[in-house]
Length: 498
Image 1 (cartoon, rainbow, N blue to C red):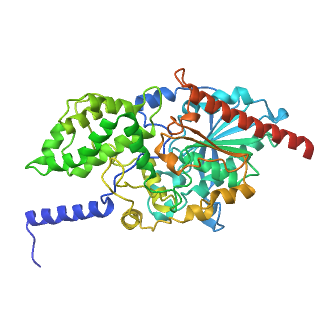
Image 2 (image 1 turned 90 degrees about the horizontal axis):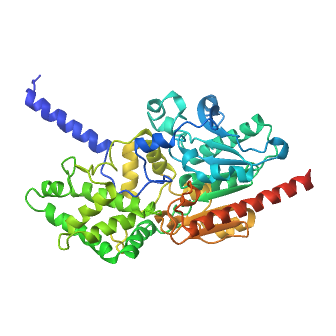
Image 3 (image 1 turned 30 degrees about the vertical axis):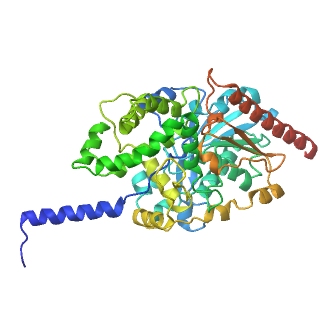
């Protein structure tokens, strides 16, 4: 047998490594901002928000792994985290309500600091507060660890929205039993993906929750119900309305990036121009970074800072004629002055939560989001074939793009929900790109769409600030009035039917 030399072995090893990376981490389309309810926090901000509060008590529930199967392994349990605050609760004797926050694709740790709708209105409703962490996120991991839970498609297969809302149902009933709160009405609240879960929960479990507040819930972004170019059309609209010259500069910048990259040592020139922390491997990396930054600024374009304005003021204030210099000024203004900028921060090695969310969007939650030619971005429509190949290579599964509308509905939503559904608030801010997949018109007298022209992603359920504008204060007040009517009707029915 022929013995290979060390250089040859090294080349083969490197080739195999490259093949492995290509198969397991294939290039992806440009990413849109995730479905979190707020801009990602620094670790310092997170620690500040998570300051100890004795009123919030953490518990763990032995949750069933599979609610929809009766094989022996389905009865396996895992510890699911939930948090309770009874400080302002009127008690079971008065049938005081329970406000439940549905944890989205993230840890539940900071919910009580972020979700001011619950903490600020608990005294008003004399409500018990309940926050439930989503399975496979934070500390609510089946199989004992994330490494075991994510080892293959079989162990990840228990991660889906139907299992999640069944978890929520089990914990709500457990808490009601624990506090002898049989007749306490439940209102579920969620933002973004959590808002989707809240609306779906009201449809699937109307005997448990009497109403739902679904903030920035893009439930129509599936199976072609909402146009795939809607997200980036609103990002573009946000920038264009703020500054047409800023919009034009961004639109021209993509060609300029490619022009510079075509020069000898062009990628290095771009790296120096944007002070990247690591060398650029391709122009896609820089463009994807900018794409994600603009999308994030638009999605969380909240007062009083208004990040889109911050970016555009910097772009417009930089010297004319140097398009990339203007774009870099926008980066510095948004990200802060830094010795270098990590253009791979949006595509860096994923956290456990990132990986879990990728599984969900590769399996059932197929968002058909892409760039249209009429946006300020290079045309890149959603391609189901490349999306499917990416999910196959990553998880070995085929996406199910029709399942959400089959299980929850979406097509002809008005006709369907008008006949049997009630007590859902769909709130949206029209500056939020995800509002393009939201419910923006009333469906009935009790399925109500509340939209604000200047609102951003899930802003209405976040903690209030002294600088909040009048339109935001009014939106929150309207939500309280609607929920108050739901509760009054419930108590009337309770007396009459008991």
